[in-house]
Image 1 (cartoon, rainbow, N blue to C red):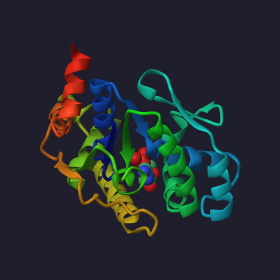
Image 2 (tube, helix red, strand yellow):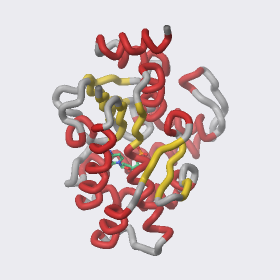
Image 3 (cartoon, rainbow, N blue to C red):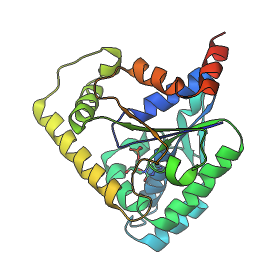
Image 4 (cartoon, rainbow, N blue to C red):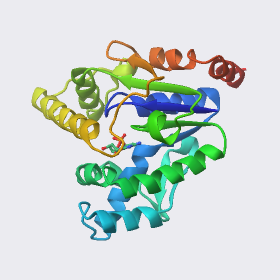
Length: 235
Ligand code: DC
């Protein structure tokens, strides 16, 4: 079965998708990590992320794999890039890279190959609309920009709001995160190639006022098959 989880940056998609996959015995696929890997490979090789033709070549040749427990490690062309794809430099480069239709075509083809292997929870921006329009379960996960910025800021300080681990954050840092989120949302939603938008048949979940487990439970409850798998996996 295929579960598609889409939503803006900072909505908590990644941790939620990973937990749904773990509870239900499905493979987790982080498609954002794939676009980030292409951006990273471009920077490594001196390819300008705005150069659509050369960026597309990098994407077509890239071998991106997930390994380790829960598919947590990201390996691009044989190099473990798990941490390297989370830098501010990669974050800046990934916007033009992911707006390039030829890059998207190459990534979508790879993602569908993973889907063919069976049971997957895929997370991104266009999973329910483009990659797996026939997914068994589709979720569009949102939260207010303020809630998302707050979670990120706390996370950067080593806390985790979803699990009740509150830490003090600098108001200016939080404001900067909020500005960046709003900018990225606008970019992702307004680009021509596969803009971020909910599939018509996606269940919309606003997690602004919800805890982590509550969101995971709500997604599992959307489908009797998922609920059965979660029950079986626990038994
Ligand atoms: O989810 P993330 O922050 O790791 O995504 C990184 C970037 O990749 C983000 O700018 C949006 C883009 N992306 C995309 O265009 N399509 C996807 N399916 C996943 C991510």
